[in-house]
Length: 460
Image 1 (cartoon, rainbow, N blue to C red):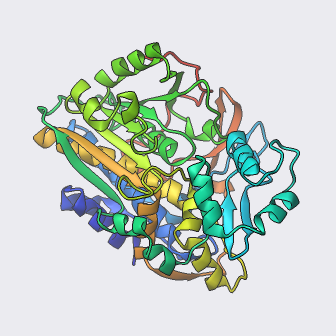
Image 2 (cartoon, rainbow, N blue to C red; image 1 turned 120 degrees about the vertical axis):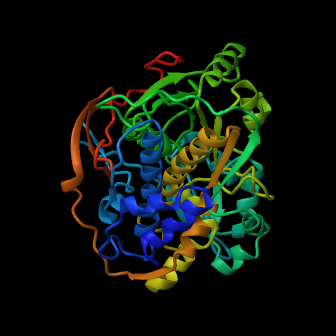
């Protein structure tokens, strides 16, 4: 399958005009990284969909017709989460994160956040804190069955995944729930509202000028979606809790955004969020299904506050099924849904092997940005409020549908041709330029990335 062939059904299923597909070019010259999966097609097609949808919104506002080009190499390298701050590339993995052998298989721990690390250590009967070494974890896990530890960790609100084969995952009830939903995204009407007027095109502008995107996401997939919309001109307001930690990648993924603090456990914080939703065009959130609803901010509640809004939701394992409320990150979803075992088999490796990038995160981010824009185009045409849903596991299902490739011997190309240096509130950044090229309105970030809480929780 080519990237063009992968993009076409995404575009069709989003009910967008097929003629627009003539305006995109997706050049590729084979695998970019060593893997047996078509990660270059996933990255290129999903980002291409997001960029092409932005062009359609710009044209609907009176903007120019233009061509979109997404080079596969650039799209993949931009999905490596590579950046430096003041010349230093952060170490993204805690020493305890990774795969461990159990009595009957393997599990993957995610220990990048101290509370996840310490919870897993307590479950294993080990001292919490950074002083506990990997060897102690290995010894403690040796007597556990993989899925028993996975279930015990989930019951404790922790993030652990047992390694499965594709066959084992396909027999899992959560995989059955995913198969009952369109992959890799759903777009559903959730309320009635007239079409919203959009600001007319202004010379020298960007396709999404004037669009207000309220982003309540963390880690990678959601922040990548918000960063993508900001690159096309949207006013993206990132809202973080002042009590929750963030990963270092926030310096990269916050480009183009305003960044504010709100505490949703506080009445004043919830009231401020209500005010923001009332004036938002897109409400993007990455909470577990049901978590925001418990605080009064379900998709239906958002539509009642702001008729005509697009609510874009991201989850690990999907909105329905026994694992719908389960926490998860890209690396864990890869492990749980069969990718690590399948990749190991392709390479002839004895232990599960991770894919060479967080492809589920980046593809999900691009698809969330695409879905939100597709819903905006529908809203402009027929009105209504809309709900877009993307899950990492659903993206994995789509990635499998793209087929396997002979990419085991591929070598990563140099990243330097795509790097630019910019100032930020985190320091001097080396980052990759946006990988989608728009012929008339080049994508760009008008605001530097800033630490959480740098801005007021208010629209500009």
